[in-house]
Image (cartoon, rainbow, N blue to C red; front, side, top):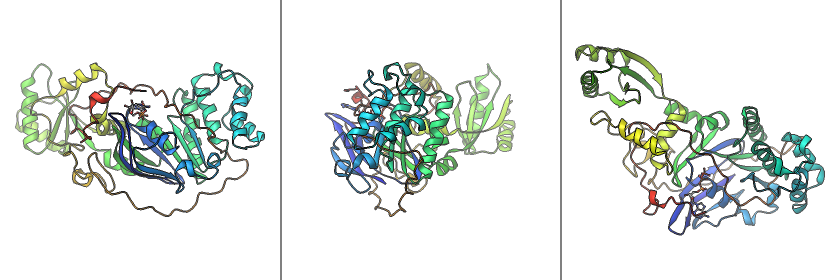
Length: 414
Ligand SMILES: Nc1ncnc2c1ncn2[C@@H]1O[C@H](COP(=O)(O)OP(=O)(O)OP(=O)(O)O)[C@@H](O)[C@H]1O
């Protein structure tokens, strides 16, 4: 198990990670989600002893990484797939790592087969595609057959077949009783891969819950309502009538309205009563990606100016509810705003959970995939930009970040 308690990392004036407490348990894939620059790689580096926390601590199997006996056989990691000597072949690269950790050479060929690189094992890695590089990084992480595995954005650059392979592979590792901690900025991917989610924004914990709970708490139903184009008066009249009846009304980008809190027949009756004609009235369900975007959007550091303009244009005075599913007073306990127990929101300083006892992970069976992260690379991965998803109409209350966790701090000092 990985356990972080009050983990904080500052780089000069920049707070990359703030007061993070969580546990990553064996036998499950735990997704580590957050927008670009939210502190995922920094957290992983601290877990692996590559960065020293400014405050708090993190342990693997009860030990700080640097004190872990025989670490390469206990923990494997993929942090930066490009951290490979390009002049060496895949096999040579893995042989070097294996030798450093006292791992037999036959294990190198085993892991090359597991990741599907056996046919290019003797080719220089500088000719590898990003996807092949990711597979080589995963092979390195498996070398020591570790019980704990960390993968930073492992599907970066992989084609759909590769993504499917990684997804199934993570699940297989977890089913063998291993602790699997996988970072990503894509909710859609994690919803398919992970059993549990830890979501951070600007270095702070936003959510810590099972994927099942995340889905049931975030798959809210809503109605889309459209009034005749070219008659904004109708739209305003309907917005007022729906809001007065207790509905929450948000403008959609295409001019329609998104209504929650009222059943469809009631919306129809209210429109009729207000003498408003409807061109559309349809039931919908919010996607998980959307829920995640809403949850983290107050904590996004890097956003296209086009998206920012769209968000501004969408803010219709009077049409936006005070406190949607994520609208919360800074520092409010999650339970007060409809989050499940155990969820934490920015500014809510919950004492760290006591350590829990878990059944030890199933032992590795020969022939099954596994091993280590000898000499885990230290550089953070080059993550792709956020997908161009339009932000919701009304940004939720900004997280109550510590004084130095501000937008002006986001200059990358790396
Ligand atoms: N060595 C460093 N010196 C200064 N600032 C740093 C350093 N490493 C990270 N940061 C900053 O800390 C913040 C968190 O970075 P980190 O790489 O951990 O985020 P991330 O969630 O992994 O992002 P991405 O998804 O883009 O990889 C960023 O603002 C980053 O610029």
